[in-house]
Length: 196
Image (cartoon, rainbow, N blue to C red):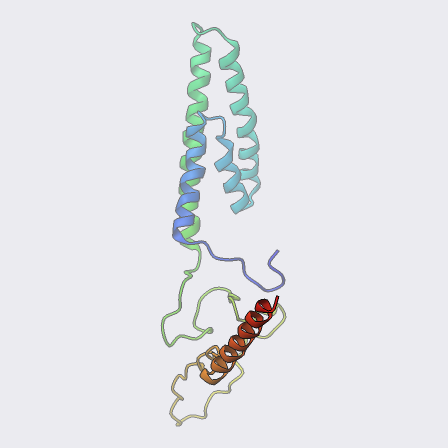
């Protein structure tokens, strides 16, 4: 989707927290019916067989519990046990997701703006292709193109890239010329309309 070598856009902390709250609340707010949703998210992020098995078993378990609640009379305690079980599944899957997601995002390398004076070689993690910058080549070498100075020579100071060229505005003489031509055209049109 992003092409070869281009990294997907990074999520902000607000997006991560919003997704975390929505996935964790899905099991509780649906009374346990969607308790498998946070489990599927964990399975997608981790990719382990045990997580996939837990997620796929959570879906029919919540459906079976709701079927039991709907099929037994209200005076039967089996319905109460089934409802308690499905609510516990919703809360447990949300808690399991929160624990995993918080640990997962703590292990990711930090992203964000680089400190001033830093270069791309100092940034941890994969290179990111932003607007106006070329995407990383998958088979390119990661060696810097400059050579190290011989011992005893002072290091070169950091020189920032030149600022981008400013957009060119039309010169005042050109504006005056265009204004004069428009005035002539409006005079011509007025004369032409008066002759009718």
